[in-house]
Length: 443
Image (cartoon, rainbow, N blue to C red):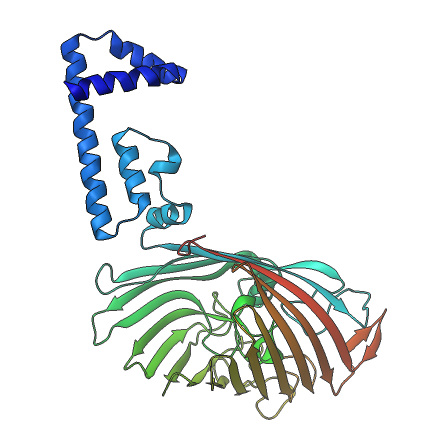
């Protein structure tokens, strides 16, 4: 009975210093019969022995104190949110299951030294507003990739709001009101063929070019001339991707055309992409696309007779973890328009050099040349030169900041200074901030 006496003595001290809730519980216990009280004491002693046993086992196996605290709280009936729930990131990931939720908010301030009265930058699609704060893009991604073990079906939906979405969808024959806020939307099936043949059906971004729509995935803040004029932004149709090996992969697709969910003719556009990665330092991608793109009223050769062709090449080389070189070339031709006896063509090249000081800081330079020989893509026969310098800093792991100087030059006076004076160049400074989030990341 020594243990019972010790328990009663301890209970007396606890009663003297207890909180109202605990005192009430202990007073209720004092009203119980001696047999009931003895039974309760035996239960508590058994729980204490169990906790001591668990503590001894964990000390022997190198367990941590947080597990002991969790076990103790469980035995004592502690149901506070801090003790019983996991972290917010784990709860969100567990709630979504195989589906991930991610996105970003992209804002910028741009200054144009020409001080155009319209407060717009010439020949800039994604950062067209000058001398003001502006919203480039707010993006939300809902993604569930297909898997060979759990589910061979998947989906990918990307919603976007801002200036970038207007630039991407403005030339769709369906108009901005048709799918203005839809950047991508397709479902996937991973066919059990070899290493896995993935088939996507819907709207997806183009495989062409060294740059993409999202600022955070590019080297520079502003998108270059080749991305804005030499290649399409997106396609709507069917795509199949297959990796023969870790070093070789290919994609084929059949789509409505360039930047068109709603078709503007009765023809289809076909394409193929080949990727080669001989080692971790070097990668090579060759894309080719061909098909009728003009509407019947603009095709001087007849309906679906003018086939637009595009050759796009991207080469990347990283001699070490800090330094990266990228070269992108484009050549397009084939459209026949009124007033020209031969097909139009355009060509361009861009080179990038990125040097990362560490995980937070990086410098990037870009030089590009673009020749719109017939004025088919830019509206006037001309050739451009562009130089861009970008300083990047990561803030807190989720905020990407960039400060950028860019100079655009043309052989024609296509830029505007002040209230309307035509000039051949423009200089801009841009400060951009991108806040990123992902349900798969711990915060």
